[in-house]
Amino acid sequence: MRISPKENKSGLTNLLANVLVDLGFPSIYANLVYWARVYRIPLDEVDNILKSWNENGILEIRYALKCPKCGAYLGEYKHIDEVPNILICPMGHEISKEEFMDIIKDLDERDKLFTVLLYPTEHGKHFFRRFQKRKEEILQKRVERIISKSTLR
Ligand SMILES: [Zn+2]
Image 1 (tube, rainbow, N blue to C red):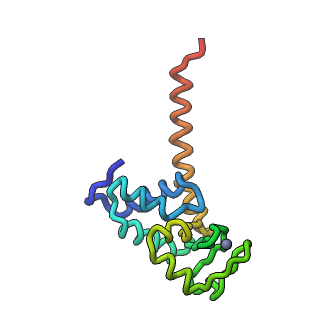
Image 2: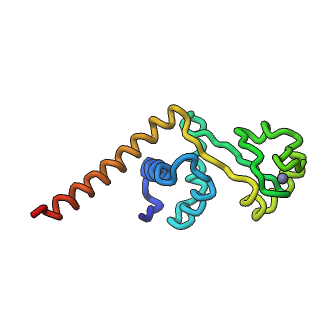
Image 3: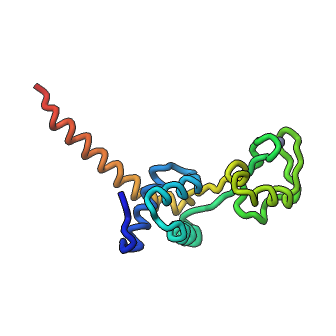
């Protein structure tokens, strides 16, 4: 599965939809970054499709935060603006939003503490179901082929 640069945009859109269905929801954006790298797909093209899905109400992007002191889960936010000025983890560690943003400027720390999640909206569930169905049909055909080959004697 390698995409040529000439491959049209709808081809990449369909492929990306299939990949998201394969990854399952919520999909972790970092996994898409690895996927794009492996298949040499320009990340900005992937980002543009995700952005348009977000704008068209198909995908919701959420940011999951972890405590820099103990790694405990600090919650999910739809926008960075929603993050409270003071974050308090279940273990009682306090960190200001400003400090947190400062820490995740470091790429390693960002990977550990800041996860970008992609959720389908209600509308998006219908959109992605088409790709799920297609996958199930392909699997069904494969199973039928195997059954027909292993003739029951
Ligand atoms: Zn903590």
